[in-house]
Image 1: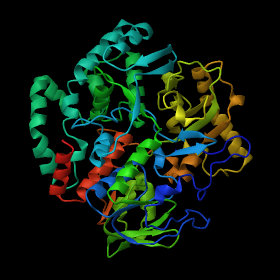
Image 2: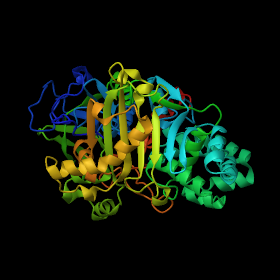
Image 3: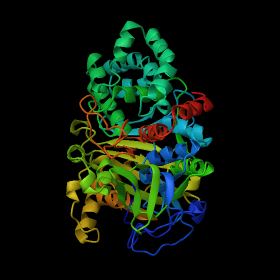
Image 4: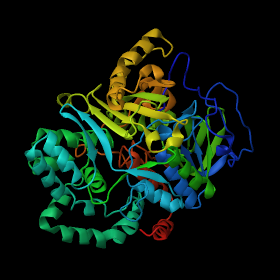
Length: 571
């Protein structure tokens, strides 16, 4: 989710221009290969072999690689970009440190069996992640604007004012029904799951007592409700006969923020987990003190601490298959890196397919991937500006919904705004703010397909399609904000996504409907080739991709090694 194009001639740095400190790769013995026509910036000793080669350094790939290193596997991550993190990477322009993707987090500092999967991985790596905490975000909706607070009671006041007593009663009915189910939804730690029959030992037998206890505590009615955990959350809402328009719209918005789909497309287990995180006593939201880059840095520290390596600017041209099995990767430079045990692709399902030799791909596998519907792409706006004239009590997050009637998944309708410098001032120069506004997974790629990124037509379309974000920012920041005073202005389009993130058609990920379709597992028809990330179970979002990476890592080691890790972190 990197951005491109700014004021005047400002452009995103092309692949090949270093964006990261050289020490980021200093511990690696791997050639750092530029993913463009630029010459290699570093040539070091090449040891072209590892137990596992991970393609891509998104959060899913880094979680997988770091855990494999923790399991004493020889692992290397090869990343096409000059900066790690995939859709969660950060970048610096004129002293402003921008997040390119996710910015809304909770449970990063949690520990134990019910912790956020990313927190469990960091715990396994012995890495901490200092965070600022907060409990609210500003909401701008057709009915008005208000400060929405998480927690069990605060939201009732907003409902009373903007939606009326019926909405209050339905919200209470919902919380009473779903919060008890969270015990079952969270009873099986994601880090305990693996992709083979060993899961009977690491998950089923290990956590059966807690699962049984949770069902007993819920009683017959609650246990019956728990059977819907793998069904669409809309079925839970329909079963409770929730009909208030504001409640249904609000819950659609929460589902969309979580996974890019409405309640009819998200698993009940995901939503119930979120409700437990956001609407229980003492809950809070978190933001890493050094931005999203701090998450990536923590995972890389864990990777390197246990002997793993990462090679940036190392573009994978193809996954090499010999005698029917994946045996390594070939870089654009021509270098071959052999994988003794496995290749793990953190690319999307469509991009992974394009890395494989056509002659080895079963037609059924190819057809399934090509027929999988895609979420739409993104529009982004990154701004760096002077804080003078901006109110002192500005919050980090703002959500603008222009028209409930069009649906939260309609294009040009929902804008998310993050101003992380209000919690982490070091992300901007003194007296300045850094801002990221975006429309998540709603921008049609078809509008942009085939455009020349250097053309006047492209610049005109970017100006037109970004206007709704500018207006949302002006509404959120107030009269003290002026467009012309921004020192950095970057607009990113679906073509930016496609180019910088190597995302097929700039997509957010698979558009799969819960209850009707399931996210693919992590193995493939090609022996020794595995996949992790948002094209695999459990799906889209930071907790989900962290879990997917952990599942693949667990699947590549013995049950005893896996069990020892669970014992070590107390889950």
